[in-house]
Length: 165
Image 1 (tube, rainbow, N blue to C red):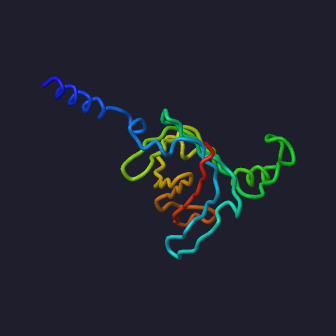
Image 2 (image 1 turned 90 degrees about the vertical axis):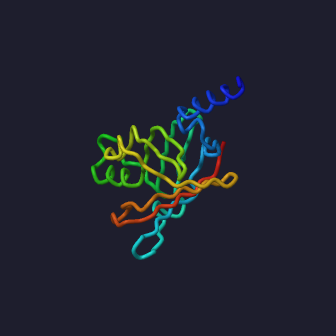
């Protein structure tokens, strides 16, 4: 009978753990971006979002934190510092990089990112859902249909990462 109560207590406690503690730990680590493509939901057209060789990293910690920073292939340095460079150059730099950080929870369907800081301020305070599939040292991350670059049309984004650690 004591064994039964211990089991019941353990199960009751487990239901209150954050999802990231009880989740599949295969996502935890540092991941390097290999590719990022979008598929237009209406036309089916597939486009390399940040060029043939985008760069970036996605990091998930065991404590439930995440951060991502992605940059386009061939980004050019600014002609000056970030304050005095002409607005057109700064706009180009902004449009060829995306970064955000926050917490995450793994759900039955994928991963929910809760954005706390972002280059795109409109995402702060939002939840960004991603479908995730880990196969060895490769992780595929897919968005639900969202408005995407460069034209704001509805697309599904697919990002492929390789595990670094």
